[in-house]
Image (cartoon, rainbow, N blue to C red; front, top):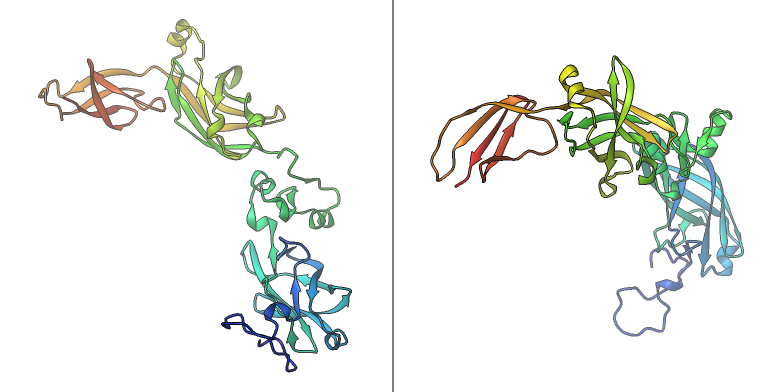
Length: 348
């Protein structure tokens, strides 16, 4: 083997048939300190020691000098190392990189006698990462895998040590805490009929860590002259909830009298999302309860075999999350709609 020096001979892994020599498994080598830890995780900018287990180290190697070698983005960094028992302890190294990537892989080797690497059959390597490169908001930050130990540090995702070194007074949120500053970025559709039943999809930031955080907190605010006079429930669908970023809910009937409708016209208000009854997000745009109605249809007739493209003119024709058109008992397949018209193709 190339890495088994000083005339130590082993049988190659591809050799056929029996051999009196030992195989490559008997070469001096490094192993992970646990069955799953071939990936050593280190936050960028941190000063960290590294330790690995060694096997098959003969006495003449034990008496030599050891070094740990890391190739970080093409830059080779070395650190002195000590062998104590079956563990190699590398002196602390500053792990840092300058690219915009959320993480990079640094190759790792233990060198003995100045230039000879121990075998690394498990490909033990170092992942250097930046929490802020993997998540740009609190919700996504706290959803990162536990192995990274990231948390929210005021306005960025970071590990606890770096957060508290930059400002000891800044609270560091771990993944069991609720993110502040939820935001509703957009929602669709923007209107629906008075009867309710419209499914609204709300996209945002920091909108809960689990479904229970928002289960009873989604509403349409009923506002008059900028003052909230009531809340209309929107019931979220558990199966459509995407942690921190998306809620789909069904709007209930606003239960406002027809007399009130006749006076005020469409009732509108922002979408409200309360997170665990603690933080509140409010949309900039408003949702409208409207009363769609048809004003005209063209053409006025067509063949019984179907295939006629009808244009149905009206008001608030884009309201609601779904639309169906029928001519008596026959379905007319909707192919287009906007606020003023629906187009559909008649069936036979």
